[in-house]
Image (cartoon, rainbow, N blue to C red; front, top):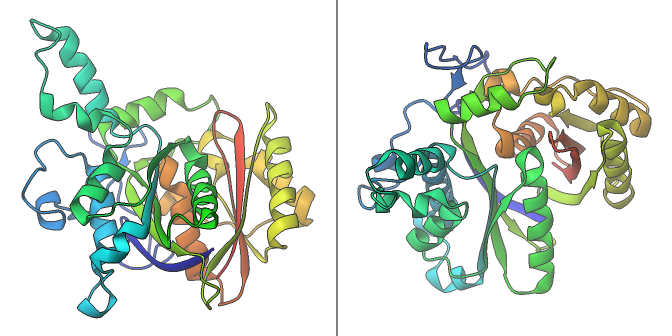
Length: 330
């Protein structure tokens, strides 16, 4: 599966692996770890002024990134409307817009009548709002899917995309993950983080890939494997072994499991399979805890770091016990 192009919204205007750690907002209304946001992002500018009154930032990131890939920087690389019927959309998330979901639920309880809620917020409160808006605004009429899976969501989206391409129903897929940094999500992440886990600021952003099945030069996704177990190290070791057997032995590893205190289990599994420890890549200092988008940013970091043709692995462990490994080639 070839990565034909990519687009992203992150705290950095250029490469994720460049520069110092991102600035953190430590407002009084936030948990101690704070937030890392995408600076200067304006929904009206990036998406357009119409139909955005209730749109959340995660959806706006996805719509804008999809537009970059479909409309291109110039007319020569624009995807024609005729080809968008053979274009799929697969977008990963943790739960959609937690801010909208929680506020919509609260309004149904505190308003004089349960039905006296903002009707414009209802579609935003469902998980598939982001891929739906991407399809509507960019006239993409192929298969459309939202995948929920925490830190493993991007891996599941890549695996789903691979199966969809193999089915012959599409010629290309826009596959990505998007998250927003809000006080609501920050407090939920703060409450859910296991005891002993190092606190990380909650981050936001979007990574979108245009994937094709064409056998052409360029970065590729070679294998995706997941495994569920009560023991995180065992789960990741199993996923990593199956990914390596299918996609080859990686030269570079980008681990991402430290946010929930699984860094030790991740290191143990990688060492058991590869016989060596990975070079540290501190994504969280640069992007914050982006949950479903974490593997997307890890992928961008691998593509920025690795020389062309270098095999790399991305690993993650979700707090549910689901471990995943993505192997690709830069």
